[in-house]
Image (cartoon, rainbow, N blue to C red; front, side, top):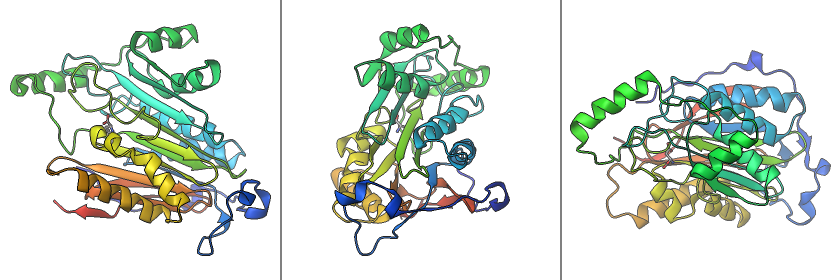
Length: 329
Ligand code: ASP
């Protein structure tokens, strides 16, 4: 269960100016709508409670005039490197064979993107995803090839299965009959979206995937358009929850397209959630949460079930926010 908290730590988030639309170049191709808040507000949002620690690292970069891309990478790396979290990076729940396999992607304001999937023994898959984007002609590397590439880039080998995760997996094996279990509580990807003070958007998404998944299973998180999508002319979106459900509707890409068509980030997220609900006859254990951020820094969130939350950070705010949802438990 998530701890549902709302708090503000404004003192830690010092003075930083907002940027008016006149400072940004993309408007001529994509004029602002009458109802929009036309001031660009540097903003970081990210999924779940661990978004607070992620946003804290991201904001340090934003407020020192860094890029949204650096901000999201640095933020989610903190969560990847935290061994106490069981859904991302080191300490992540393994697959049903007891192996921790990680998925991640990253996307910048120029629609450049990189991803890794089914990656083992590397603590920060988001950094490998960024290197795929920047150092190769490709978008995604998987498995052994992704691992070899990471090592060639000087990234160290790291055992990701902690004693605690191993113990939990062995407990699970006793009753599982080796069946991967889908459960509303056994996943918690970190997806992060940022708008920097240059008016540029970026996003990152990283996960150990569904706990005790089948070996080789990859969800939405490293799939550009499903777990993450960024279009600097419009906005960005990311997803968490049952990856199979998110992939089926290309959740993040659709959220961005709905914003392009004039929906607010909030309405775009709700529409994607509606679409997922329409496509599934049985919603038991299908939790999905969507986050969206438009090019002005307006944010939206929605989920199927209650208990989805996200961290929101701006110059005067650093708080955990409960998402609107469709179904309460
Ligand atoms: N979306 C992830 C996946 O399906 C799980 C999560 O959100 O934690 O792999």
